[in-house]
Length: 135
Image (cartoon, rainbow, N blue to C red; front, top):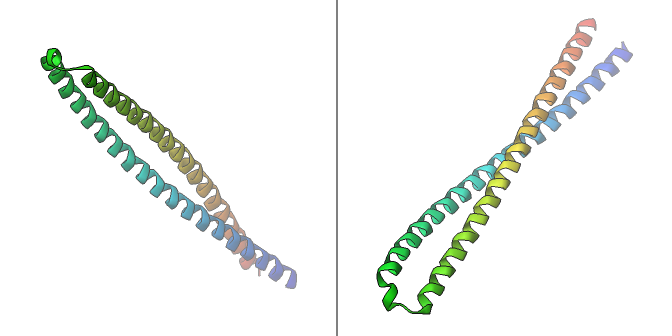
């Protein structure tokens, strides 16, 4: 009886440990979910700014074409600066997309890990129930 009690206690400790692991994985999953949401928000903001700058660039190009004869070299420099900024925003957007993909992969891995922990927890619960039944 003492041996079974010890076995049951060990199973309960294992279950508690697995539950703590599961809780930790769920916390990490939630943290990554928030990071993913923040990355998506940043990506959306970057895309909107990119679209706005593209619109500005198009408007500036039309004005530049119309006023080209009256403009000096500074106008061309301004346009190049805007294109460089637009290019930098595109690079930033691409980096955010990569971060978003990485976060999604990590989230997927954590979800798989949670499912594995849940299955192990269920097995431990089943073993505990059998041990308690045998007692």
